[in-house]
Image 1 (cartoon, rainbow over the protein chains, first blue to last red):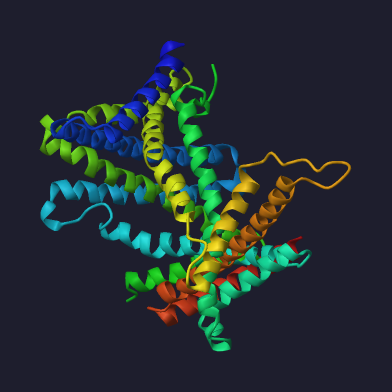
Image 2: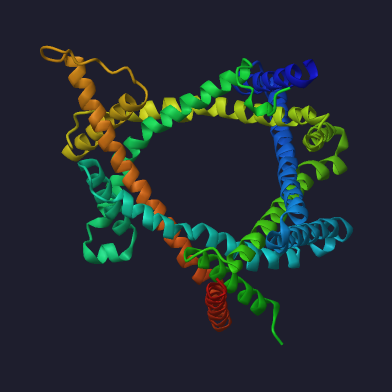
Length: 227
Length: 241
């Protein structure tokens, strides 16, 4: 129980307190330098651990599709093979680039500049990513039809503002009426800023409360399954 | 001889069309493109993680171990995350997750009070009477909409309307602020909605500009062939049904 639940929570509280001390407390210049170095070290630790978390995520996808290969049947198996081969290929080229950066540094090749890796990124990842992201425009079109049906004054206001902002963002809007651009700028600077200010304050309060809950061991959902 | 760039343009164009074919209905081409994308994206994430590990931990450890020795602890904590696959020792992964969450929480606790609360409040404390009427109107709007939004979100204890007689002054004040808050937020959401649409449309256009234009003929031919293949696939699928 102690090593499974208490010690991890204790480490969380300890690291939070240490990082808050490093940031807010000033004793003298030497101590401040040490605090700054320790603070950077802890931030680097988080980067290192996050990198491992990304790798764990990749391994999870690999394991999932291996299972699909065994149990998914003929309908799913070919697609899982595509995912597995694509993931492996990308990792192999990336690792090859990393190895080259150590074995032959004169070439100046790293993971992201390895030619095959770059090719896969430029011609497979980048267009697919953009297409996946932009495909949502069609769903937004249907969502906007529902949202823009004027049923009350609030919906009418939302519709008018959305039309002004959209026209203000395009050159067509400026051709129709030159005032769309300054009107859009005013909407974004005054009412939009004011509307999102309370949301920002509310989110800030939420973050502080969550942090305090972590500090006093009230928030345990991050530990996953219960014993 | 077809160069790798032209082949890439063909593949990129085909992938875009295959992914867009989902707008009509789910089909085998979309599934292929989707699974290829998932695989490549996962591999890309792993490679980026390796790159980051190399830059932040491995290189400092190999060049200056006397100063960077403590990164070994972080590497061990990171490796412990793989214990989540063990039924017996899954709890060891909590140590790595714990440190990460703690650093994230501490960073948020350090910056949020100032950025999300104090600065927002100080930015709202504005002069309500100025020589310039436009500035005065803007300041009034900023203050009232912010107060209205706060009334709507945070001060959620609404003064009750008496069953008989006139409602109290706080009731009216609260009601007015509440309504201003809702209307202000509608303006904000309208602007957000419009910006989201414009971003997505921008991506749609950028696909053509970035990936299809450099090898226009190859790309257009590939896109047409991919579209024909999709239509043929859908027609064949229908006739089989």
